[in-house]
Length: 192
Image (cartoon, rainbow, N blue to C red):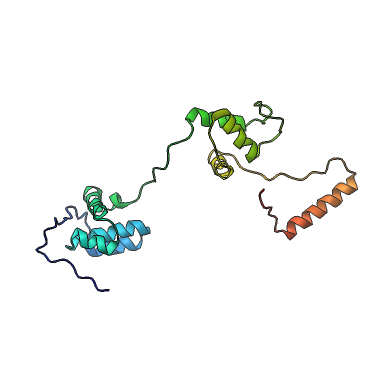
């Protein structure tokens, strides 16, 4: 489908690029080649406005709302290319305070039994999930816990199988059989 720009006599307000920032519309093409896709799209919109296209036309070409095109031009005029770079997404409100986070970290550094939560010797995702919900009335999925803990300096380890009450020969045979099974499965277990 061919695109034809609107006539100059249109009643729409025309956006203007007021800050060239030492660049030309042709230079924006090169900038866009090395930028992330959304930033490249914004640079393309600024270039089209710079070349005289109306907001509605740029909106149709880019596939964004005209208000977004106006916002891109405002950001460009205020900050140049840096204004078009995406910042971090705001995300949802935190579900726990800094004090709660510090308390959870302190609890994880001890055993569940030491903090008065059951008789378990080590934490696992089910126990930690239940502890946090019981203490702070905050629900974490186990998947979120597996992401959250490394962000706070902890790592997960898989439990090791230990045959405690067997003769030494049975322990050695068990360890060899276990190693063979792990090798056959590629060393990975499916989580429960």
